[in-house]
Image (cartoon, rainbow, N blue to C red; front, side):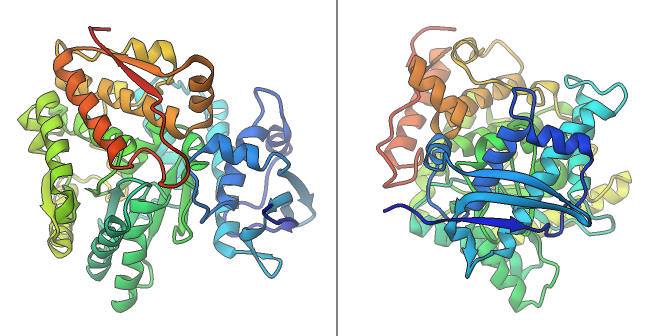
Length: 460
């Protein structure tokens, strides 16, 4: 059955109403250097909020006749949507949350692509410039609130999780909400939606009227993980590395629920940063949590981390099983520790300037067959660099699983090859096999999972 579509002229909702002629022309530009294709892809993803798919390429092909056009008006700007998905509307009117997200996409794409061209001396490979770009995008999106006490808990976990795992993430979110804490996730379904949904009830019970449900994504992933409707502040960062930096710069602690390769990528990114000597005394609460049935999952993750990065890495997090209240209490205490430290060091509550991030975690990694085969997965390097390279391996698998460009590469050239030290590669392969067996690679019922990677014996 063909899904109904609609044509509509949409007014801005809360984010961006005015564009320069130059910005309008770039958004209309369908050439390689233009922004039209990027904007169309992100807009279509937002309009598919609530649809269960994690294949960006499939989404684009299913809506090949969708178009979005900018219509200048005397009082600002409107968007004309052609053949937009009908489920984004109620009685002919676009859902307000989707309209907000649509103009957040417009705001962030325009802004993140204009800064490098307008700031004198900006260099894309300079660590300080990269952090400043992350700061400016977050500030432009009004995510950074001066004067607000630390209360933002970043929740990571899989988009493909069981109903019981989803319910547990809601229970944790509920306990966080009861303690006045706000939620930041990757904005999609599953463990990204559950904590937000639970927190809305906790906030309602405590009459918290300024609860925040921040979703941070990037263009390559948004088509596979459309923003869930609870997100009330959506931010689109330029790439996965800046998305990850945004999480740890504006968040005050992290909770990790069960997930697949994307969650493993996030864990390795975070641990690689926290293992840097400059961050040794920096308070940053990290909790891994799930139901009692997930105990073996976290034992697997913990064993992999200890084997690859050592016991010092494992000391950076606490594993709490089947106890949502204790998870929330741990985070609440962690917020107090962060506040005390930031006040003593005169560092901002709203942006973690003191956190040292090695450039290897900031520079974009392009997942392709050559780069994946060349990853340095061996022990003859500092532990935080090994974490960075393992993070890239998982990032490549994420791309091959759900990102349009990655899926096309796999279709054209076959699976990515991953090689390295057998003492690292064998546990990596075993963990990936568990992710497949537990249906953590793709949404159940969408299509049978075909691995986008192949483990190769021997060093790279």
